[in-house]
Image (tube, rainbow, N blue to C red; front, top):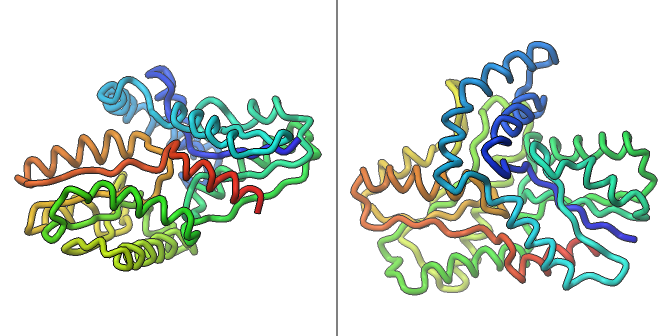
Length: 310
């Protein structure tokens, strides 16, 4: 049997899992790069406790949970339509159930596992972290399956056509001549980039690719920009921030595409669609909208099935 395993960061399935999510994320050495495990555990505990109530309140505003698991489960169901009889698709999360080891325990008889990290761009905080979790689970379960890993796919024409389709559909009934298209990427501390992480390079190249495809299709916006969201703490992060870009936008009209994500999550349905919508309202924007991620789009499901075979 051949297993296609989708990997992602995860998100709380209910309010009781918010603490689990924060605790596991900040205990991850790929996220909090403190070499001492004891010190990292202490700092993670402090951050979790300080952010817990705010985070729970944020999730209450989007139904008490992240949409990421439900959407990914639906995506797996659609992928199955494009698979052979001896192939199956499943998903596992890094910080919340279903955890990678628990999922893999159900597929110990698989002869081959195609690992598909659902991150278009590479970063130690996403791809490396998820693969570390996967490899640890394989060792603990003593799996003997042949392993193949799908590389970051931001340069794949098929994936980018899916994104441009979504942008074009959202812009269909709009006068885009005075609307700015903003590709919003999850930010990272500058020190991670300075240490050699290729994430910023991948994101910038991706924006350029998508901009060129839009131009070829004749989809014209006043301008196309890259901004970064989700910064946390006092250290220097990638810039410009989305806050800054919105504040300096003269025409007060913005269409947002969350370029870092394949599946909608709290950073898109809460942060972009609620928090930044509130900021746009305060700045008296005439237009502000957020485009949904590929999620369980049929074309995205087929892309994953095809890419896994390659």
